[in-house]
Length: 62
Image 1 (cartoon, rainbow, N blue to C red):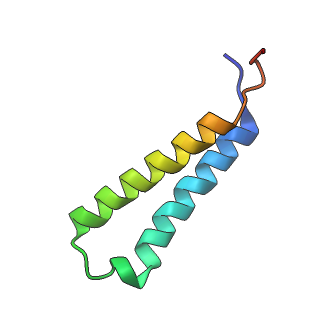
Image 2 (tube, rainbow, N blue to C red):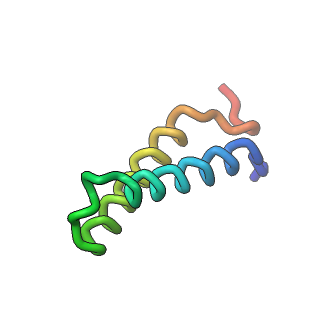
């Protein structure tokens, strides 16, 4: 397993961005805390899934 520092940094920024957007967007302000948490979890999952599908790790061949 290779440590991929740029991938870790991008992942951290994306997670922070999704959480910040959900917390600071008026569209989600009226929702309950549980509903916002679910939206954050789904948002983070989808964005990280896309990043992992597109990002080739350093040790990958082919």
